[in-house]
Amino acid sequence: DGSELVEANSYVRANQIEPSEDMKGIAEGRNLIVVTLESLQSFAINEEMNGQTITPFLNSLTKDQDTIYFENFYHQTGLGKTSDSEFLLENSLYPLSGGAVFFTHSGNTFNSMAESLGNEGYSTNVQHANTKSFWNRDIMYESLNIDEFYDIESYEIAEGQAVNWGMKDIPFMEQSVDHMTEMQQPFYSRLLTLTNHHPFTLDEEDKLIDEYDSNSGTLNRYFQTSRYLDESVKVLFEELKEKGLYENSIIVMYGDHYGISENHNEAMTQYLGEEVTDFTSAELQKVPFFVHIPGYGKGDVDDEVGGQIDMRPTIMNLMGMDTSKDIQFGGDLFSEEHEELVIFRDGRLVTDEVVYAGNVCYDKETGEPTEQELCAPFIEQAFTELEYSESIINGDLLRFYDEEDGQLTTIPDVELKQ
Ligand code: GP9
Ligand code: MN
Image 1 (cartoon, rainbow, N blue to C red):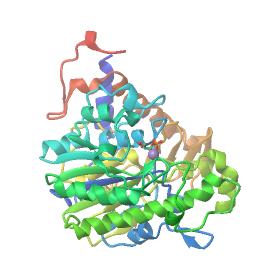
Image 2: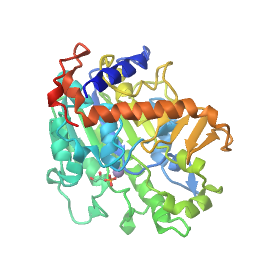
Image 3: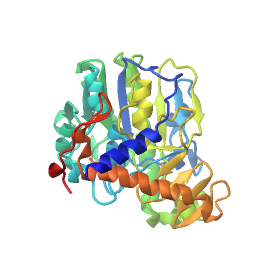
Image 4: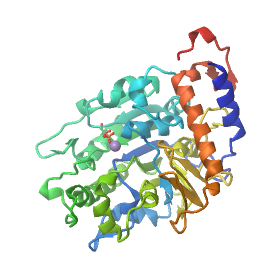
């Protein structure tokens, strides 16, 4: 019932951290561009495959003075895959344990990042060259208060510009930047890429590196499509510069979820040169998270342990927006107070010291099992946090929350959904 919102609210308030003062408002008033890097896992970054660089452009960003790259960042998605990552980004709530929240709760009230930016005068949109109803996006985006959806109808796909699931990422980036030139500024525009998606197929001319040589065709091709995705990000940066949109924007990029499932453990063992245990599998859920701020000048590789739940508070602080009254479960990654605990949607968890997976507590440094006690308090916290987040979604409880003054409005018990 409604008392769950009261409890969840006190939990959120009790765990709230102070965002970084140094980073506050550093990108205030700029256009915000968020790129979802389809299926990209961190094991591809700054690594080679048979002597070939997998992501040269993204690698260069990790060394760039205007970029902060988070190397210990994990996805927290469930069955809703890309859409779950979008949900985490917009709301800093956990997706559901069963089913995609984009389908099951698209009629809920949310307090999305898009809505908050919209209230600040931003125009907001998502660009994705797929049918608008995929993942129920057309309906859910209304609940998230996203003004516009540039779906497949907004793109011209010439001969040779489609492969695998649809439009190739390079022409997608080009046309998406064209759209940006028409947008009311400042804008918040999200770009969802598509080429680096299972089954990872490419046209010959787009294969910029060789296939890998394992027993898994999926993993073998994954390196090539990741390489192609990397090239498309380079094109995005070039186009933004060419169109004069670069300097006045901030570009945030994140991997949405794994591309290589545990079905390919044997091939991954060959690639990594070590056996893929439950510990390794959990660590393989790292996805890249980039914050690129033109003119920043103090770029770094940040080893803070964090996850997708932290994107909203982190970005909103950069945009100079106060989230202290919002119901969100993540925290600003740049804050000294940020808690190094990542709760996976399936109950696994990672901290700076332990990894809990397959009911075993591992020492993060050695990857060896350690005392269960070291994980116990985090297991408890994970359970509580996932429960609160889930009760908010299942009860559509944000209907009764006024984030303007951080107050619960009267809760009419009779109206509550079960
Ligand atoms: C489809 C794209 C990919 O529109 O979001 O979906 P996924 O299978 O990764 O969730
Ligand atoms: Mn995806």
